[in-house]
Image 1 (cartoon, rainbow, N blue to C red):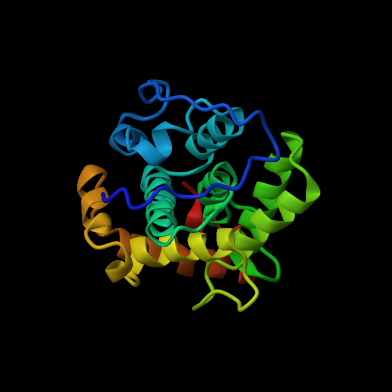
Image 2: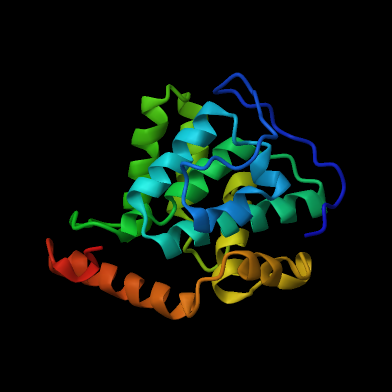
Length: 219
């Protein structure tokens, strides 16, 4: 993956800003290790909020969605580095970790579908970790809006980058902005037929809005 120019970074307002260049933690799934070893993720592994988000992702998501979430963050970061976009890196990792959390489980979904449920789960997580209201609002908006065809005109960098990473990983849209990165990450952590299985899960999730408690998306 091309490193691109040195990227300006938004200071982390919710933590010490500590980072680590240690090896990927062995407590996390083996399938994640090639992605956790990529510099953009490896340098965040020592941050408490990043570590907590990864542990929650491991607990909440089935393997293919978790790998998709990691690839989403790496693709978003690659885009930011390519274009010199400053953004909340730890916050975006947390948003990527939770952006599909609403697709799993049996909780009935209300208006807004699974992205709104995902945003609620992210907000609860961030509140538990004493993340401030402004930062929480920015990150939960990014999650709520990631299924829009295109980002809103007034979307901030976190929302735009999350949207970019999600759509590039699932559909390939935007690949020319970071040539070769999608193929590289898919080779490191493959999820065969992911677009098909993801679409089926989204459809099943839609049924939950009509049939609360339906087991169709039970893991």
